Length: 228
Ligand code: TZP
Ligand code: MG
Image (tube, rainbow, N blue to C red; front, side, top):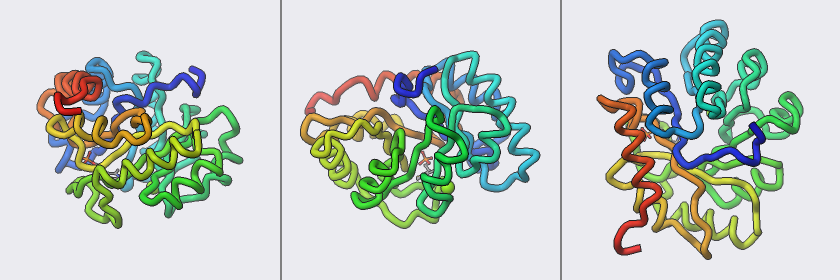
């Protein structure tokens, strides 16, 4: 899989906490989501020990590989190296992009969370492959969020990406679900530049039927709302 060809349109971020996953099985949820059309998976687990993270990531990678979809690891370059998956996603409080790139090499996918145009500029100049723009809407999934940027905030980021003719891909995250996905995709457009996709946790992981939820989101993000 060439990293330039990665499709970010429906980006699933995992969450294994009972409040989100319920009694479901994480592997079954991820496989169902992939069947429903998820195009990129990030394994996010802030609680488990390294050994358990590696074991879970290995199993997830075996699943994502069947669907030719990249697996990225939240925060942990060491885990990504151990399982030889496609890359990592780092936040502003994690290791720097330069450090991650040095460890993983030029072919790895590295994504960075950005909440301001300044962070976006730094990520672009630093060689990020994609940015996760957020938090768009307040969400119980991540209650320590510092910046709620709204659709207008996403628009400012897309304006920057368009003006700077950046090739960095963009997804947005935070409170995105079937009720607002189409609006987020299309109302955030700036200077003809649209997001490359949306990232969701609970809209798929907490869904009773994750495959149906992913199918629905896939359809919605590809369909402009009537007023757009
Ligand atoms: N980063 C910003 S918001 C968020 C992360 C990981 C959680 C998004 O979860 P949900 O359930 O899609 O609102
Ligand atoms: Mg992080």
